[in-house]
Length: 604
Figure 1 (tube, rainbow, N blue to C red):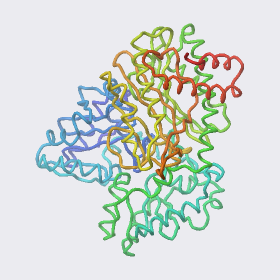
Figure 2: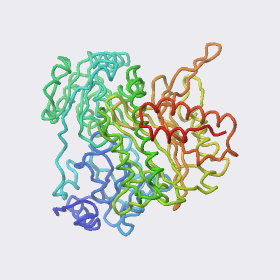
Figure 3: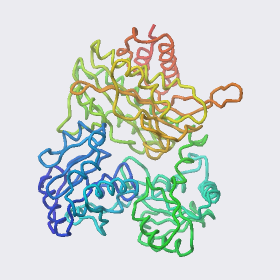
Figure 4: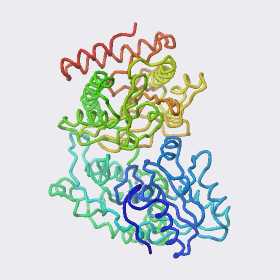
């Protein structure tokens, strides 16, 4: 085996890493290997020890996949990362593919030699993902091969150790429900579905169910672990005991039994021996859990993680926490926007300086616990990279006559925030105003939506895109994602997107409203607020729902083209700005308050 040291882009080149991996694969009799951006829990953000995709390719986005064969290699990303992958991945080593234009199954079918074995780590893929590769291998006349250990780990000599972040109790005053109540209600749902137990692999589900939080992965305050919830409301928790803090025993209670992670397999075997029906989520759980249960003869109930929907429907206490957190967060964002206007044209403000300033303004809050994702601080052309992440190499100064896009959020004990504002640096062009206003019209149309109970986000997505479509524009990302309560900033099962989604929007769900437009090489525009699903007045017994806007910060009036706005749209923006002004003025200093008064003045 060849041991490779260093981080992407430093001591050892990506080409040398790939060569070492190919040598390792050849020794194992493999024709290729799949490298997902994933850990054993399908987390969006990974601990350093799980950043295998970044280590082997240099690509640091939060979603992607590579396939490395003996003679060919490719990286696959969606529309959010097409510009980022071009900047980070060497096209002499990897073909860079848009996963829609060149699906991974088609690439594998075209390039994998017949009769070869395509290896994969069964801890890092779900059955849903593996079925796609199975189809590709069949077309290529080859086969999928699960591996007992990951070949990248075999050559990555200075791989960081697994995380050991402390686990703490999350107080019921923030959650609005005790862990015991959640265990009882989710277990009752299992019983109603004739399921004896559910294997939970999603850390946010376990953190929500037990009312605990951790720090094993960046940006999402949750511990990495597995759990088995039984229909009697007891739970077996497979977690490294070194993470447990002293007060957890009292918090968890007698119905939660703690085990070391390496006894999860035997526990699955016992479920099979007892002839239990076991729920596993094929879209979220690693395929190795399915394989273990199937080998032991268990009855597997393939279905959605039973914690996902109740977690998405926030309690009254959680909604109050969201509102409080967004007020304080809005004050920090407003202070930042006022600082930006005062300094951008005269102080050489860069993307990094701006992101650091915004984080510093948030961090003084006593309930602040860190960012909810890496701040997207994009000046000019960098703003057109949907999930841009500034580095010393890409750091740009904000220039007069350009647009600056800042997408940011924070984790507070009482809520999670995610907000995007696009700001004109100096005087914007007529084209910038035109494009910004089309995005704003879509944002207002979705924020104003009133819809019957049972409506999914996919049915509402067109509202955010219509104005853009009418001018021949679109954006290559979803319009809205669910948001956790001091948990993952991106959560399901609800979403707003063009792709079909059967999950209905329900009372208490929190979701983003973020249409955008991106002109490659020039600028990006996105306007994002978080909204909560609320009751609306229906007629004749029809239950109706609407959105309550949670995020509070000015939208740049200098970028609004009034000629494109309807009277109702102008009324919406003026009313929103009046609410921002009335809510935040008492939370900011006098100088910022004067700026806020100007920034939220009526349009007409």
